[in-house]
Image 1 (cartoon, helix red, strand yellow):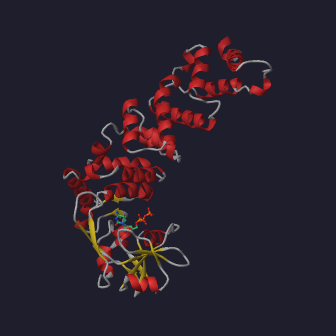
Image 2: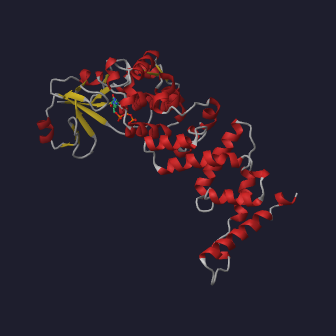
Length: 363
Ligand code: CTP
């Protein structure tokens, strides 16, 4: 048997990036031989093993054939006659279809190294179309690598468009969409994820309510927080549509909440200086700013970005002044003998007085 390092580890090593995870391909072995060597079988759908010591993944070289719709309908052959080239051929991108032998030889039948040098995301073969998740993966790789100048090859984009037109994207299940979307939110340029999906037509199928706003996307690229990236990408979408997107893709609450907060309260943010102190306190309370100040500060940061893009008023400095003044600790007040309702009223009054005392209201 022969063992090769494959996939992302080879790609990242050639790019000079830190290697996240090592995946290995084993050629010329059977399941029994692997078990005899102490590997533990983990793959449910095809033979993948964990190394007894390093716990890295070792997969038998395999070829796949699509037998049904969607990404689950696959049959595979992992017999010991499957070659390394066969295994590389079934992979998504040329830059992900390289292997490195133990002797350090690069096996690169599809010119992945050249595509790495030319910064091109190019599919390996027509078999690309057999797995619609790959559309999302390409968009995610664009989000990760566009900082280095990578773009999607025109012929790969055409293929992705064909897949969308053939209805392949309709078969994607929610979990897979969110998994790739979430990963993209953690990349350097999450906005590229949507750009690529838009260009191939998948955005219109997966997220019909989202309209791309180039200026806002550009301005958002300074943010490296995935929850903020999520909320910003949904800015401009109605609350009803945000909720339905979040339901459809089972988006975790922490993302959902921030997006809803931003869309609900941005209109208040830009007008807040025109309103009385009571309104400002109401805004601070409804945004739960006193209890969730980290989230509140994320909200303010996003408002600043949007206000800059649309040339609307920047209210952060004023809001923060009020927030600091009204951040009254319950311990400071004499609460002895008061009911819960009375405590609430007392704190409210103290906060309101603190806000009203701001010089802004005495000009
Ligand atoms: N792969 C594929 N098609 C998929 C998923 C994976 O062809 N739908 C192949 C690619 O060759 C990929 C390898 O399996 O390089 C490993 O997949 P994965 O670990 O998901 O991705 P990586 O390329 O390692 O990227 P990442 O850095 O995001 O882990």
